Length: 235
Image (cartoon, rainbow, N blue to C red):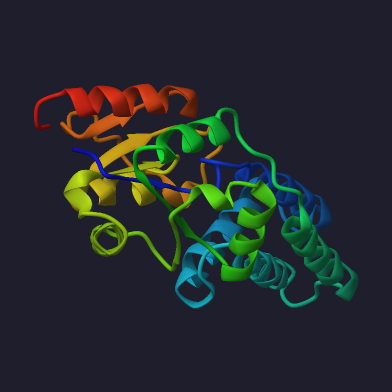
């Protein structure tokens, strides 16, 4: 029996990665005289990977990684105006209106009738809280967890605190690495809803043979899947 449904936020309920890609394009344009785009993106990704432990996930860490990369590829000669442009791009991302993905509201509202609904997301606390408030979905969640990372232990703790344990919980998200695989490792169900744009650091192999794994093309099919899971023998 499923009692609890967990939802990821960014690129599961609302757009996120698209704004990062647009900002990366602007970043490449600003530094086109100093580095080829592919090389610049490789350096930026390396900086992001290196800085996650210090800055965490989200726009602020991304902005700092862009500044660090700009300093590196220009050997310290990056103009102050370029730094100002990068900072402005980061602020624009923080201020961008929330754009819900198709079927997000309907899926959450439908499942909230018979389940505990928990938002489990990584990122900057203030920014994620702001996006949730702007989304209009806040009242549908029984709990909100903004975490520094998503591991099997994260899901065990969250689903114990806000439900009846990971074994009776299902996690929905667009990231195999963060949303699905660790939820399966915790003993729960994992539902992968691909977004189309995925950050390279979230790439992982699909656990297609796992008995508690499912893949859906969009959130509109999620209530039907949950209903079928309730009707199946123990899985």
